[in-house]
Amino acid sequence: MRARLGNLEVALQAEAVEEGEGGLLLRGKEVRAFPPSRGTRFFRHGWQSWSLASWVDPDSPPKPLLPKERRPQADDPFLLEARAWWGSGLGALRLEDGRVLLLGALDPGARVLGRGDLLLGRYALGGERWFLALGDEEEVFAAYARLLPRRLSGRPPRVWCSWYSFYTEISEALLLEVLEEVAGLPFEVFQVDDGWQRALGDWEPNDRFPRGMAFLAERIREKGLRAGLWLAPFLVTADSPLFRERPDWVLRDREGLPLPAGFNWGKPLYALDSGNEEVLDYLARLVERVRGWGYDYLKLDFLYAAALPGAEGEERYRRAMERIREAAGEAYLLLCGAPVLASLGLADGLRVGPDVAPYWDNEDRSFWLQDPTGPGLRNALRTTLHRLWLMGNVHVDPDVVYFRSRFNLLRLEERRLQEALAHLTGFKATSDPPSWLLEEERAALERFLSEEGKVRRLGPYRFSLQGEELDYAPLL
Ligand code: 9PG
Image (cartoon, rainbow, N blue to C red; front, side, top):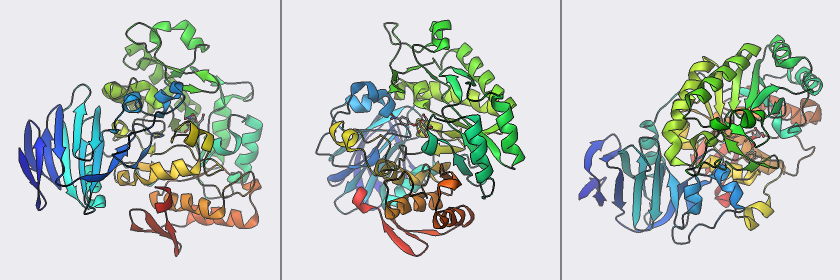
């Protein structure tokens, strides 16, 4: 069939088509849209927070990400095994005249194939609703986002997070010291990251936190801050107590083998089966326990594990997260490593790119291993920049900003690119301990936290920050 989009005719295959707000609403488990002229770029949308979102050349096929063991933690494994360009949930083609044709799923669990002459959308299991639009890039993405779930809980938070300075080397004594320094600045949340727990699946404090997690939360709250805590609730490793005690809770493939969930902390990762009611009860109790300790800002990480093997698991992921949402009550949930579209409506904050790092790029990983998901400012900026269209649906977390020159290979101009995105989204976080900052760096941090509306969007990839023009095109 053919349908009118704007002033152009587009050929389509779908079970049904009707007019919608800003585009067409299609139905079908699988739908096709044929662009009126060739697409020169494909908007490839990665599955979870860390997965690549970027415009790519539809005529040169994707390169296989290495090593294979990392694929489950880099993206929907299907997308990385495919020899053509597929995206998660949506896809778009940029036509020769600059206009963009976008096909986006309105239910969880979809993938979109992009070729110069075709957008093909397919639901992995259930689901049949799609949105198709043609027009200006910012307009078509905005029209799509308006049809997706939304949860906007007040204004985004200002967070001090322990990860990007201390990594897992945290302790009660160290964090109490930093807390004293942080308390003099306009932060709202003091968030303890990875390193407090005994093991994955054993969410009790290790011996570096001798007075327990409730004690620390208490000290944080005394300073007038909200206490934040990191958890990777669905992850286990083969040596996790939980793995040994409850082998039946581990997500398995059809042969009964534990499904690989990636490789981190020097070990292969596995997942808890988010479709198992007992697992969900356990998770609800876990969340209630940390709430009881006094933490009301939870950074829930490596969440893709709950949705493996990929798009097929998104409905199961959503049901599990609904249960967690319920147990968390009014706590702020920052979801990370999370299937992006399937998290909308449940997350308060959502990380939309890979981790930043105090360097621009790790070429061993990005070049030789063809992995755009590793920590590094370049990777983080690129993917975050391509997900800013979600700002009306959720607090978009671009990850922390560095103000320190200490232990940092980033140049000031590079740090400013990240600062501008945080100003734009309003989600303002850093891991810099104030005592590491030079006087002018501390002043910059203070301004960052207290000033608003300092950034203007000049175009999809151009911004001005405090009068200084920033162009992101070179990293696209
Ligand atoms: C704690 C960290 C921080 C960070 C999270 C997440 O692809 N990877 O190998 C990979 C490893 C770790 C990671 C992201 C990607 O970091 O994003 O903010 O909480 O866990 O371990």
